[in-house]
Every structure is written in C-alpha cells, then in structure tokens.
Length: 408
Image (cartoon, rainbow, N blue to C red; front, side, top):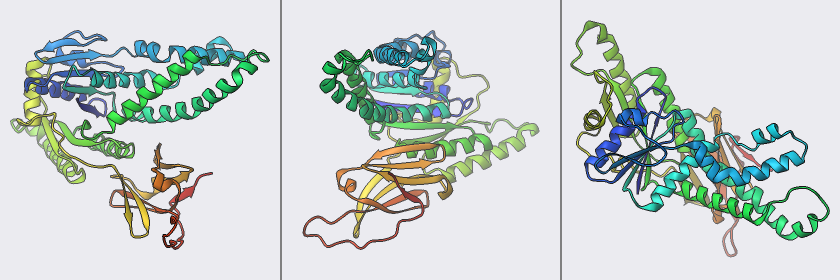
C-alpha cells in the first residue's frame, strides 16, 4: 500500500489538498481510502458527504472515513488504563486524579495511526491518504509511536520479568495490584502494533509526507520548521504544495502588490526546499465535492500520478569514513545553537529545539562512543570512535566537539 500523509499549518487548505489527492488517485484507478486523523474533522465537508468511523463510498474506487478517537482509545488502552487506575488508587490518589493520570497526552490520536497499519495489512486499498491535524499536533503525533514504544519496551519488559518470577510470592504479602497475563499480553500487542506503525511510516518507498503551505511569510516560516522536525524524526517528505496562489486572471490593481509578494515567497520556497514544489491557485469558490476537487488536483499534479514518490531521500545514513563510523542526519534549516547530541548506552539522542529523538544504534556503533559532531549545510554528522576488534590497529583518540555530551 502507498501511504500519503498530508499536513500543514491550520488554514492553508491541507484537507482540500488531501481530498483532491485522493480523488485524483481514485480517478487513475487506484483503490483509494482517505482518512482523517484530525480531531476537528473536515474531510467529509470537503467531499460534501457525511462520513463516520468506517469507510464510506464517495466515488468509484474512493472511500473515506473520519476516525473516532474515543473508540480507538477504548479498543487499545482500556485494559492498560484499568490497571494504571487501580495502581494509582492503591498508592493513595483519588479516583478522579487516577483517571486523569492514566491518560497520556496524545493517546487518542496515536491510536488512530494504528488504523493506518490495519488498512495497510488488510490489503483492501492501494492508496491511503491521511489528512493529519495542523503541523504542531502532527509532529507530536508522528513522534508518539517511537516514544510510547520506547516506554512500553522498557517499563513493561522489567514488569514482565518481575511479575513472572516474584508475583506468586509477592501476591501473598501485599495488596498492591499486580498485572496479570491478560494485561501483559495487551501491552505486547500494543507494542507490536506501534513497531508496525513506525516501520510503515518510516519506509520511504511506502510512506511520504506532502507538506502544504501558502505563499505568506508566517506560513512559510512554519513550513520550514515543520520540514526540519520531520527530518529529525526520519520521515520522508517528497513534495511541497504551495496552495492558494492568486491566479493570473486577477488584474485588479488592489491585488497587484499581493500577487508580487506571493511570487517572491514562492520563489524563496523553491530556492530553500530541495523538493518538487507543486502549486494550486486560489479558487473563486471553495473546492467542495469530487468535481471541484478533481479540478484542484489537476492543477496541483498537472497530469501526473499523485501516488508516485516524487523525491527519494534517506534522512539517516551510516557509513565508514577512514578510521571512523559516521552517522549523518539531514536537518534542513537547523542551526547549531538549537541542536544537542548525546549518547546514552545503546542510544543516540538528538535534540532540535523543542523536539528530541532517540535513535537505537546498530551493533557496530553500540560498542563505540561519540567522538564529535558537526552541523553544516543542513546536515548533522556524528562521528563515532569504534574500538578495534582483534587484529585491527588501534584508532587514535580525538577530543569530542562541544556539540556532543556523553549521557550517564
């Protein structure tokens, strides 16, 4: 299955672009499903039909759905939540406080992503177009599979071992609620689903992000920050869609200055982004319904197939250079003052502004240590000193860059 994730700052027309992309894909014969993970659903409004929590036929080869996050929460978190509530109440919290603390921020939206995996595995569609929330929420959402998977792997791995060995004895000497086999199985299922979601979303041959923006200074600045953060988390962005350009047919003097500024911003975006830049004009009326959306798609994609991967890239690469191993990460628009890198056991942590990513290092780098790091030309290069194996010459030591900290 081909997955297209469409996001952008609120108000740029990302839902219209997502819906138009789905209409175009279906028109080319691809079995297409458009899905909204935005809590403020408007995908049904774009198609001009009522949508629910299950796929609804919109046109030939085209279905759409607006996921109910509360239903997904109950499906995937109810059992775990029940145990957390009982544990928190045992520790002395009131019921209302325990209920509140058992819900991690973003869980509802996160479980909507598991539906992406479910549809991919079902094989009923060729293309899935995901209309995401505005960029800030999308970045938080896309970082959650890895973050929650990290938490579940560490917190519950110890818990599984502990309860398997100690639970029979501990249950006789304490009233503390202990997780049962059913709960541990639920956690395992959730963990495997999150790994599947992460692998699907980070596979650049199957999943790419289309970033929607407008030719305006504030919106363009937000798009640059989003593009940087998406690279940090390893997502493949294959196109920038500049939407709502004033059409050439508008010649009223009132709009002359606005059109000139839009063209300046458009040229700056083309110069700054190493991406195909697609454009869509501001329509006289909102593009509602499949006919209007098809017109918008024709303008944006100009006869091409929207399911094609428009640009291939590798956000993270590892290679040997001389006597070092180098991990390279594309970080467009980043500057050294907002980047921090440190290693802790078998993981490398990279922080860019408010976002932090944990990268599990391959075996060859785990036995090494960070020697230095440098950010230049939109690329972070982290150099590792890997101790020589038997028979290899010893590598010479070298001071680490101030950009790098060793974790404890």
